[in-house]
Image (cartoon, rainbow, N blue to C red; front, top):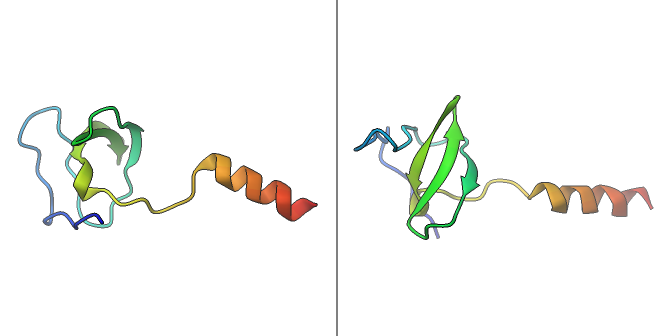
Length: 71
């Protein structure tokens, strides 16, 4: 289970992403267990993985669901 970040999360280094609770972050790289790369509000940077919670189904799952509903 992910914990909510403090409000707002301010980057400690230039490569960290600044965000607030409730912001949507599009994760692009999960190779590191502790730090994920993502984009929010037009900015890209690293965020602690334990501050991120999945909010939506993957695109693949949505496409499969639409195909099943059409048949």
